[in-house]
Image (cartoon, rainbow, N blue to C red; front, side, top):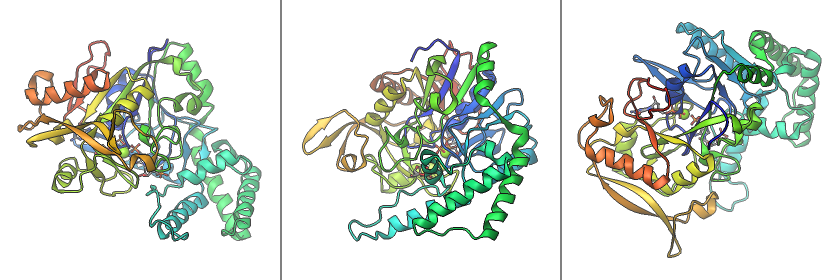
Length: 442
Ligand code: GDP
Ligand code: IMO
Ligand code: MG
């Protein structure tokens, strides 16, 4: 992607948890605003600074830098209660949150969205049709799907701006409740309705200082020559259109979601950084061709501390899928890659990467963004030499063993994009920066 602009996007290239938060935190000081454009509190982005760990769900990972605006764009679905807790936690650890801005057009995740998410998942798990076992998606149960569904249905969807108006709020909650009653789900009694209106009006008041028309806010920044960093949540293979449907989330998680989720054209992007973990993980259900359900997989999980930031669930682990990575790099038109968690692979004799899929005896190097078809592929591996020494103290390419450099080079060549950053540990400082032109010399 070579746009006109000075803006940067950071996008996950796998099924999430690639270390986007760390890369955003690293690049934030070189931008004037960090902007979330999709998803909600299903995201869990970890930033580690000098031993202190911050888990961010709705608030952009630039928040730790006090001179950078943190913007929640219109494409995000916001649980106000969760957001207020997150703000409180950050304030308690001494973070200045005054630079937060929330789009008045972002949609609100309501309690009935959480309930519907949980109820759909349990109905899918118990397989009422009797056909094919557990069909649940393994969602984060943060109400994401139902909130986006109501947005697309329109009439009773609540936006952040609506929290300021009791009448609108009451009408919309009431209407939504009537729709759910007609579908045989629980409606709300008058008492429950009153309490909910009061509660969400209260959240509206608490969030009011942060609410803004972020479209004009961002365009005013761009007009004065400021630069914006867009922080992708979830990741490309979870994109509702381009991911492993139906085992995806409900938003546009790739770079393609930026324009609709913020109102800023992708032509403003000068750099698109695809974040790629050195191996593969997935939380929740869905096909995973390179999954390792053995001691090797356990070892990666332990070394990588692969347990969800949002739900604490153990992540499924496997070898790096380069067929999928090349697809995601093409889709996002990545200008470069940040390869993260390379340190986790120290100590393995051999490293494998998937370079093709085999289906019904036919070999192909094309990804298949469809769960049923992808579940039938067999991975074709290329073996590369492992490296025995720990690399968490490496700060330049020269500090890496030659086998680690060969792994990075192989990946770069296969997916057709330069690797500008290499992560060797969770801390901000545990990053090898290779790009000369970025100014991101952190
Ligand atoms: P995100 O959702 O993409 O922001 O990623 P998460 O924060 O959910 O998961 C990534 C995990 O890996 C977090 O615990 C990070 O602190 C950690 N992490 C990020 N980069 C590295 C790295 O290069 N090496 C190691 N060992 N851990 C990393
Ligand atoms: P970050 O930003 C990992 C997965 C869920 C589930 C599916 C749908 O931290 O990388 P949802 O609650 O969105 O309806 O769940 O998507 N999922 C993620 N997995 N990291 C994430 O975000 C995810 N966001 C959603 O596990 O399989
Ligand atoms: Mg995460």
